[in-house]
Length: 102
Image 1 (tube, rainbow, N blue to C red):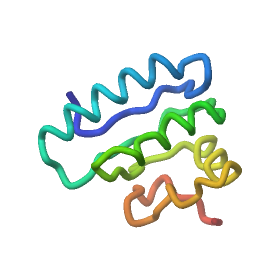
Image 2 (cartoon, rainbow, N blue to C red):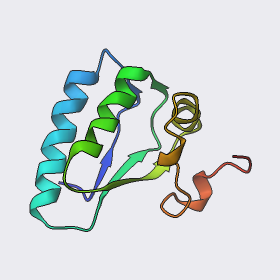
Image 3 (cartoon, one colour):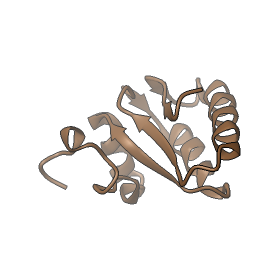
């Protein structure tokens, strides 16, 4: 498995079950490797809704911390709108994906 989890292009209620299964399997595998934190990429997300963000928020209930390492503009805007702007931590995101205004 990859060191980074790539969120699907459609992170919404229609793909939530499939995305959840893949995310949990990946997170379980990563936690057995005793890494410092999980890396999640949202660079390919073109459509996101509350169910998709809620799925990602469920990672916060796991023992290991996680960070976004890349985001699409669509995903970043959804995070800000739904109150998850703290996920857009500039310390972890690649500079090429950061917007000039926050």
